[in-house]
Image (cartoon, rainbow, N blue to C red):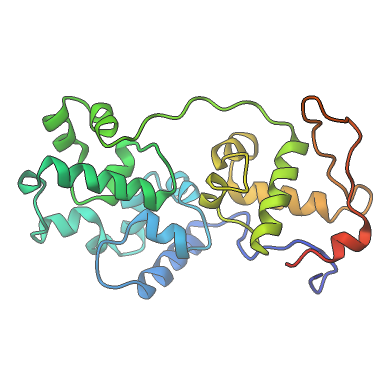
Length: 239
């Protein structure tokens, strides 16, 4: 379906956000959630801007909450109010917390910042128990990802076309880590700087009448002739 402007692909999230707009969105999402720890993962599910953009604009998730007047919803504040102390948690409980966090973020890799911003304990307790944060992540079965291959713009757009069509809407950054996507979200960030910029570049390319098709990169041992959908097939994409 085409939107009112005649485009096949559109998404509601803006490409650029000012601090004022981000603060407003933080407050909007906070009102939607119960009075508990307000995490980056929760905001990622309901917000109109990605967590990476929030961190770039404010320096950290905590500083963003501070600007929005939501520090009382941070993990630091909850710990101060008497949450379950990390020193009282067993190794199993700590590792399960890491696994659950990784699952909520849609990744197999965590950073110290992820722990600090999203869990009711800091990375210090992990170092105390396992010697290093990395050792704690490995004990939880979370291994660092290898550096990914370089993709062409055509490969980026072809993959995004498949995923967008699969969901019938603009996919989220996290969804790029799951089938039918063959290119992870981090690769898009390295190429386009932000996830919304990647979506905008894709929409512009797909709606460009002078070059409406994406030529898939030739697979090994396969014909190099591009497979191009007909204009009728493109109109049938269920968006």
